[in-house]
Length: 191
Image (cartoon, rainbow, N blue to C red; front, side, top):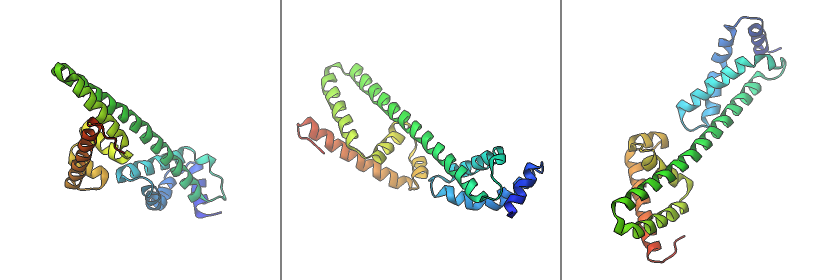
């Protein structure tokens, strides 16, 4: 029987304070394990807390004699998977939001300049095709800035870049999109 097994036995016997000893012992290594899989440190810390909560709630399912560390890491891995699935759902919703924003902008332009509506619709179609050619990370940048309206500073924090680096990347993306749209409108295919 390991020290972890004895501590788990004490917690299961009603000495809840002993769970703090497990948290103190495993918090830092578990955080590093999760931080390698989750890019933002605040989210990694939330997942660590969630993993300990799940472990506490399901402590009776731990098999004495097995590795507590492996059991806890399995819980953490599942928490990471849930986090990634939630991120994926949010990304899909954000893509829909971006499509809605594009449609709103198109409608506003069509309403405000009726004589330009054919040109605007063609330009918007070309823009959507050009955006479709971008890599996911590039589309995410555009979404953060123009659909979500995040400031450059916040985007930099999320991406671990300076605000000026984000500004430069967005500038280059806008140039690339402008060139792509112009080529499409002139009848030249882009790839």
